[in-house]
View 1 (cartoon, rainbow, N blue to C red):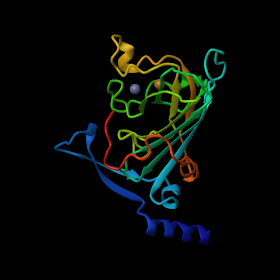
View 2 (view 1 turned 120 degrees about the horizontal axis):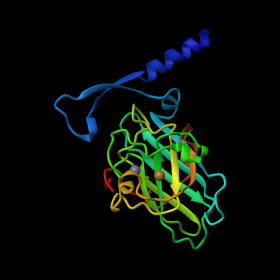
View 3 (view 1 turned 30 degrees about the vertical axis):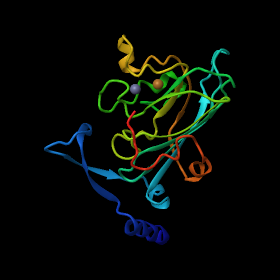
Length: 229
Ligand SMILES: [Cu+2]
Ligand SMILES: [Zn+2]
């Protein structure tokens, strides 16, 4: 018990438990900003230099028709507490070497893959906006030699606070995202990206996977050069 108390004290001294942050609602400056309490996940943020790292171990959905590729791999996230820009590393394999299909990746609301990705629900949409304005709309990806490898930044998504994507599902689709440009209602909900063929749940991890996954296309992009898609 003594040791436990000592540890708690150390953590409190090293890092404040609670940080007050001005919250700008809906991404716009407001005359009456809401004061929210942002708390860092512990012990990871303390242990890993004020940064949270997550992994999402992608596997194909069960009973995938043979016409669809079996996609495996990892999607990693990293964010500095509390307001760093979310960084993403995508490292997926299992696509045909000559695959030309463009595929959408999104974060969906529920981390429930009990019935494949159907139970993951709709796109995570905490601000009730149209697709592709959802924080977890990663966009479209094409494989090269059977793999999708990409570094990107996702400024609207967070791993901290009430709109965190932690514990939610990431879904890889069979088809291209129309990015809300389609003529039907579904375009503004999901981008008409077709079947959900692979997925995973976003969970906290150590920096190890992030540090091991180096040299992805897009990774050399300079800080402060964050073009919005
Ligand atoms: Cu999706
Ligand atoms: Zn979306």
